[in-house]
Image 1: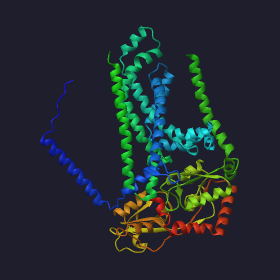
Image 2: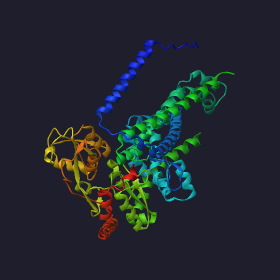
Image 3: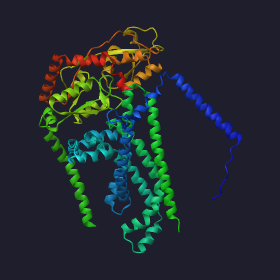
Image 4: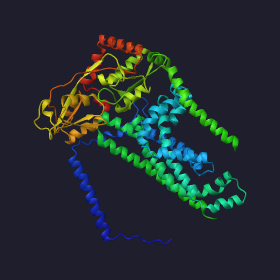
Length: 296
Length: 274
């Protein structure tokens, strides 16, 4: 690759200064227009605070919300990846019956708004599904060792049913997009690869595992990464069904303290940092994949 | 391969049958007992509420405090069960009650005839009223409620609250702008984008004290009087009877009045919030 040295000229500096000045002026005007008493010193106590009884640092309201958002995104991503992989394989498979299930699922989920989907799932589907698998009993386990594990992985026992509802609803939604990424990834691999591996006597499962998937994965990584980051951001939507994640905690805090802008800006910053970390991790993983693919 | 296919089909069918037939059966079994009975068996009273200063709010440590919280906590104590609060968005609180996400709404819910068609209300345990706070910039010099009943006046309220009903009734000519949270409605009036906010007392008065150079109170006290009750699902006489008599019992003690004056007339609790 040819490395071109980037030189910063006076024009660049002038342009940068100009753009910066405009942004500062806009922000200044915005604060003038908005009659608002800023109270930033009130915010840190909602992030971290010292517990009066034990004298230790414990997460405040906002940080508790961050933890819920992380757990929720993690479960939703894992589930969506499973759903997406299965459905993606269905869509590229030989069986017509499976192809129909796969495309029916994608068509249904992609063409409904996520907000409405989450409402419907929570109030109607979740209501029928969860008692059937005995989830509601989970909230009775308070105090048992199992409840400790449960609250570490998901939510405290009394909030497990609603947490699962939210995670499944989100996963089913994100799964539709992952299905399409996986389908596109598999279909982008040259037909010759299938034919050659078939000629070498691989079964279909073996072809997929050893030949197609490793190549497709590299192509699927960038859109998949985008989808993972999307999941973190989309998890804010489940605040409407009162899952106590970052956005919900923020709105509760605003209702109690009336610190509207401080709280929104803090939340914005936290989402940005979460998503940025996620992007950087994926970037590293992609580079790792590239290195592996290079012939030794 | 054939067996796998068969198995998948069987699993699909099983899930379908379970969701369509099995689950309602489970629910129906739950519903045989009254809510009070279920709560005692479960050992937990699930209370639906929404943040609404000073009825219910989270303090610095994330613990819920407020008038409603005191009421629900004592109610659970006397039933001999633990209390679990389910913070819920106000706009979705009635559907959540109806679909069994919690047992009762103790959340400063005004008893309205239209709401009563969907849920049952206990006897009132409290009365509240709507009050009005106006922007000094937009509504300078306006006094009395009638001054705001004009087509060019914009009023901000919280979506789905009794403030909407009260505004439509008392200020039918004014334009209403609805917000999901109270804080947003008050921010609008502080910014001077609307003329006034209608909200449950005492928050409008508290806001006027907090922003003396931006806000003022065009009327003294409140312009409505609304009963506040517990909301439960329909068709459950036992639960309603229990709640009604519990309210009568604590009201006779003077406990309700005492708690109310602590949360609504003093601001001793302010330091717990910020």
